[in-house]
Amino acid sequence: WGFNVRPTELQAGFGQVQLARVDDFQLHRLNNATLLIKLLEKYLNYFSIMRIEPGATCSWFALPIMIHQNAPFTRDEITNVLEEVGVETRPIVAGNLARHPAVSRFPSLRNQNLPGADLVHEQGFYIGIHPVNMEDEIHRIESEISQFFRRLSISVEIQ
Image: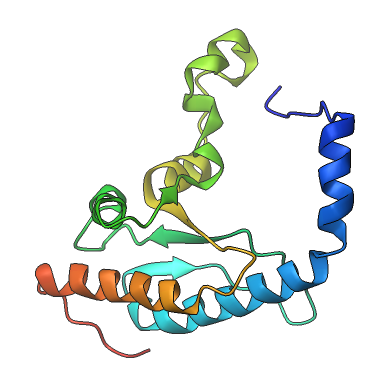
């Protein structure tokens, strides 16, 4: 459950064409993620962003962000502002899956104490990383976050 593993011939055909472009997609995602991370580093007093260990490779489909529990704003406050200006956000892997209604069909998962999953559920969100050059859009994302901080009169110290 939770997986869509029904590929069809049509999906395979699309995949074959996309495979020829995978290296370019990977390069654009890496460049986009690197720029977004660089621009967001000044906010690390208020949220954490994913880091990749040296020698590891990541195919950046999104940048996970975790709002610190002591931040002067909530995850919903910042994501609502981003959504209002056209920056789409998503919960990190749907948050704590044990809190979803579908879990009622799986009694062994109900009423579990999952503090890490709860933290991700309540404090985390994704910003998508696209497989094309998005430099202007990434600067706009940071600008919107900067405006959010200014509206709340939150000072940002360069890390």
